[in-house]
Image (cartoon, rainbow, N blue to C red):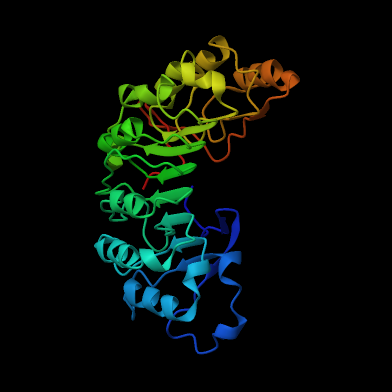
Length: 322
């Protein structure tokens, strides 16, 4: 699977792309009200005629930013070769002009602009520290991604999308103090693209000793999906979840059996397994066990297909890697 479309909405608001500098048809008077959309600001990743921070400066002049509730950072120049330091610097410099900001997504970048594993990231911790009223934060790309353990009183949703998430980032999230966090979505990826976390790095999350408000947990897009599900089968955090998402990864009968024979999952509203390598027989058992109790179970195999070499070696892939 490739990332083929930009965010259509964010923080409960429809996305609206701020016009680029060459769009002579752009009419400021026809812009939506500042608080009604998630503003997407982007430049061409390849041979851009404008730097992202210049586009952002135009945005600050054209829009009443004191009313803006959500921002989506799209591509910056040469995202495959340059990190977002200038982007982050521009956002930090403008924090006093964004008092109503509640949602921020960094790097809404498609595969055709820059593959997820090629996106150069940086230290995103200052953004979380500078915007204490944020309720939702998302970031895409694990290459050079840095995050330190942090405390945030109001953050309700945290999403980190990668083709390979550094273990240090996983450990930082697990060590963070986030009393209001309801939703955590981690795309752990593969070792080929820098994903070196293991189940032990997730232990503070799984133990339920952190994140007291968590009700939606996604640990997905992982090559160690079986090990994650085996741990989840007895993880205390599961008892207070409404949604458990283990989709997009290399989930086989081993992990699915662990979920089926582990602690009860009948309290869940949804169990998401889509893009998996589980046998049809076991998918049927999961559906027959959980759906009668009201659990929505997504067992769509999606585009997950085995590749087998002549020597019998079987290759399985996460949904979003490169």
